[in-house]
Image 1 (tube, rainbow, N blue to C red):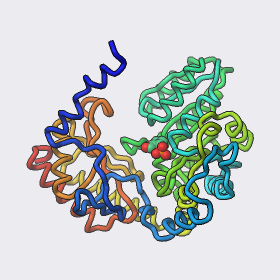
Image 2 (tube, helix red, strand yellow):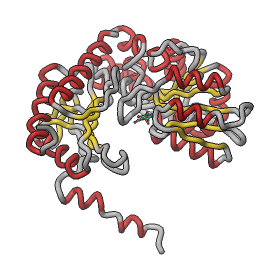
Image 3 (cartoon, rainbow, N blue to C red):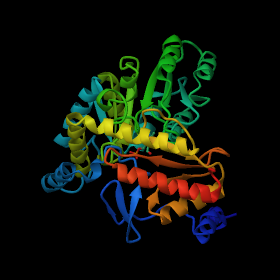
Length: 398
Ligand SMILES: Cc1ncc(COP(=O)(O)O)c(C=O)c1O
């Protein structure tokens, strides 16, 4: 048996490619936000996490360009050693203020943030308690914690009765961290934070919320899940990413000064990885400025997502209702049909994300659509029109 046998035996992607319905790794040749160029033609983008449409904003681009001029293209070191710029410190202070926490720490990606926080805090004798549908970076962090002999328990997705059943069995005096996506990345559902916080308080657990899809989308002025529920004081740690609303790349965690200071000096994902590039940090700062100055962008995003929810529902599609989130999954319920639907949409000029097994449970194969503040009615109407034609042809709706 050779280590690489499994690689040569892996033929599924090639089989799907041969059928012409492979939706992944499709190169984008130019990107204006709602419309992108792919294979030499314009395609409406309805699968991006560029929620406020800021990747193409002149001020965001200019900030990135100026940062390259001033600091160069990379930091060539970790935050711990030679990789801290005044820009990193400024963005941390601004985010702490924005989220309403004592302090903040940047990581190089959102993935690294969760993977960095969880095993650093949850150690031998401690418990991490995790929603079954949490993002892969939380799962990675949990597995690392388990590898370091912490314990992990999972509860049914967003099921707070099950959370309580699980947590109540753990020793009351053991240290515990309950972790959940704020807005779940696949379904767009918002966590039942009031109940989660009640359980956490009752059983002496700390809370980490991953607001990757919530910052800039829900809560007062886009301040995320805790703000959405007026539970800012109950959430101990809020993490996020710059790869969505913030139109950049990087991650952050906000919390109490002592906790951030501990992470700063103990998290291998921070200490042994180069810091976010000057352009990434400057772009995220510029995006934060726009988010604070132009809250009407969030209202537009909500209107757009709501219009699409209503549009899909009225045509008879099965969707998952994420309420104020920007994610609208359309359930197709079959792998082949989802991939064929995806291809027909792409050919007709609309790009969405096809989620099939094992990424989703059987029967939940879906076209995950997501929206931007910069989508105009003409884009959204076109998406609905094209969905309807294809769905009727494929027998997804009548
Ligand atoms: C819930 C959630 N957390 C974290 C991440 C990772 O963020 P990043 O792209 O910055 O690594 C994502 C990205 O898909 C996400 O959806």
